[in-house]
Length: 303
Image (cartoon, rainbow, N blue to C red; front, side, top):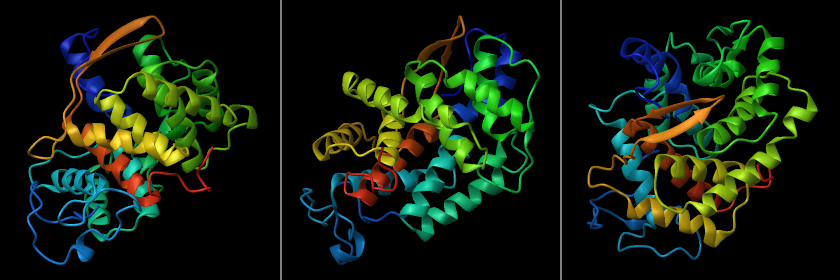
């Protein structure tokens, strides 16, 4: 979720987009050849991770492998813009679950490019914490400060921001980011009180319900799919359905795109554009987690 916000003056909107909204919105090419499945080697070498029971093409690749390979190839292209910290963090988690030298190379290049980013600590534990304002503000600025809170200082203010942000479940992007701030807090070692951490299960249930109610491809669809495949145990047919939706939306260049999104928070509305690297980053994460788990999360991450 990034881009110029309709509710801000142009100059302020550009600053806000670059500095804040990039955070909101968050692999080796395992199957070589083109979209028609041209054979370039032994299929077993190129598609070793096809989940059991999944339909494969002439190269032995299932839809998730095609999606994963094309998405990561697009992200690694020389002309691809740098990913932001949100999608980079998500792909870092995937790399730990599904080791891949090519994905590691992409992430290392991205981390170097993010040096100096206000939220760099999310992907680089050596980066400094962000000084949070005493007053979180209102409207979209309040939302942004809450989303930055896991990498912010002082710790008690960060925890208070997260507590306030997650106290009442929201919808759409604010809902997915309520879940993500809990995950990010855990990832950077911010010790949240148990009652705050325990909100995770309900947030995941609500994200799953929204995914079932909105089965059309979009940036948010890809983000929800990645979250649910990473942190829950979806039914196999449900997870396969998400991959089918994503695969059907695959563009020829492997750069998934999504239309504008309107959202509101704290009484203020905004419209955001989604850079293709954000959408494609979460497409890669969703397909990668699907391949890592066969469409089901491991017991360690299931809720």
